[in-house]
Image (cartoon, rainbow, N blue to C red; front, side, top):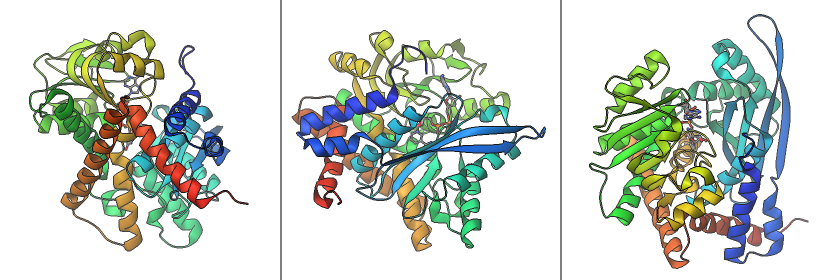
Length: 418
Ligand code: NAD
């Protein structure tokens, strides 16, 4: 975390406080929700290919399970901190509630740089991590999923590790698996499809337009960023900029995101794609465009650059890309921001569909998955939008009111034991 960046857990607590005050939630429930129910730190000793041993640090944080088993991704990143994981776990609780899927919130992480590790090293680290958190996860307890720098392969290793220790295949222990290994059709693109549905609904409300011809800039070209660019392009939008950790590209005429993806697969970056000029990640955020989609990491739009944002709509593909101070500035500037706990909830929604399919040993067709996803996202978008209109507040506050309100209602009714 850079020196001036707000601590993500402080931000999460501030968001909870705002929602609790707006909803006049009982102080005991607010107090209950401030802390994760469990935060486990584990050591993950891994033998590297050169025989050296590295003892990585990992986390699994379970925020709240009043509405269902904990659910949340696993992130591999050199800069990840326990406070970030605690914040992301809390966000997952609200996200599942906003979408009304029967899960609570969790998150996991390992402090590591997978870009500097071989596949064998990542596999050994993943399996050892799975083993060390095995007591607190389970198909009806806590179901992990992919996040930054983890993918279907990571989930397959986790499923295998858990299954070996339980003497039978247990695919419902994780979601985001390969489609041929109990994964769901549509899961790979689900987060981005949700982002696209939110962008469509937001364009309709804010600009009275559909997605055709709208100018879109996407920060981050991983699972969420690139799939969003592809789906928005297919819906008729013009993708004018994209970036990754190595830099960004811009073209006023727009470009084909699939070709950019192929270029990235060959060269490991979007930078250098023909017919585009190079821009910085900061420059991308400040481009004049209709829709800006931050789809990389947290804390990208903050007080210093919120005034310089030139988009009409922001749809948060990433978790926590906008700071609370920036939220205020953007709201005053009448930029419609669709917050992470709604905008990127397509992933957890189809994860829920995957879990249901696994439990019933069913496999639904992609059209069915996509239609069910669209229904859930559009319903949640409208629910959040209506709250924001009624209470004259931004969409983040409205989404938090919906999510925190549902969790509080569950806790109030379950009561406090003993
Ligand atoms: P990913 O690992 O597939 O991709 C991350 C991308 O961000 C890469 O292209 C990387 O190069 C880029 N990046 C890293 N640092 C950057 C920087 N400083 N500037 C610009 N780009 C940078 O991860 P992902 O799964 O696409 O996740 C991206 C974001 O979306 C994260 O915040 C994650 O929590 C959130 N998210 C992901 C899912 C999902 O289903 N994958 C669901 C909900 C939310």
